[in-house]
Length: 336
Ligand code: TRP
Image 1 (tube, rainbow, N blue to C red):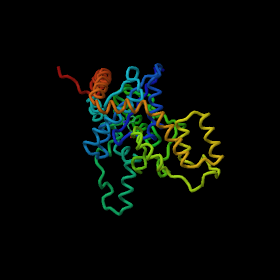
Image 2 (image 1 turned 180 degrees about the horizontal axis):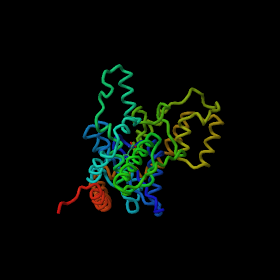
Image 3 (image 1 turned 45 degrees about the vertical axis):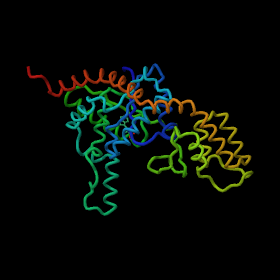
Image 4 (image 1 turned 90 degrees about the horizontal axis):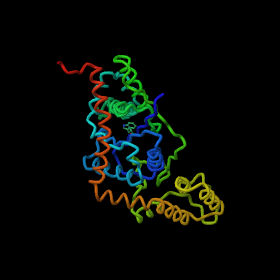
């Protein structure tokens, strides 16, 4: 079999938070540095339109996400790092794939079904109320992202697994009709990556408004960590580390030895205030060098733009000839 090709897409909504860092950014960056792996990373800015973000937020989020990955050391010589909207071949392939996508397949998408269910539950007469075509055919754009670069392995969270399977279904149908042209992808789900809780103890997520931005300035980082929910146990009383957001966060950053030491401190009744201060100092020290690089990139967005343009050139050098083959296969050809 030929070499595995990995592809990771990041929707440009929101500001990266420490949950994103631990769950996706950190493992993604480690993979980008592995010379034995062929990796594509891109900012899915057309996907963000499906969420009706406001234009300024899309631009800001694109810059923040790109600057975060770069500041943390994404290896952009080894991996290809680009912005979806810089690759016109992707929306072109999206339309081509529409012809090979059953409407019924899209009807079965979890996120679409959830919107319909919410309408039904609220007693609306139109089950499709508020659903745009961008939301509806979101999985086809995602299939094009994946198939455009012949990706075989797509690391995603559980919520995106179905989309990768749909890309596979569409590619299969395409190949059945036009010949073996598209490469079938597979989702890679890593259950070992940590899912962090947020300030209120629920899963850290933009939609719960309980996040800690990865590159919050030092003072704000401290303030947010001080807000993390704890129980009312007093200093000196033994505490359960396995039921503690503070401990879970500490463990996500610290070594096994350091974590074991904190586990003991819990048994010895460390005060919540002291634990918060310890956690703040640990994360702050860990993040500080990258935060400086991040702030410098945010202040000089043209440097980020240049990186993305370079990545787009590399990506298009692969996408353009492949799309030409695909057009040929489907009969979109010169007449003479
Ligand atoms: N839909 C993905 C998400 O919300 C982002 C994404 C867009 C993606 N295109 C992709 C992920 C292609 C993997 C492959 O997380």
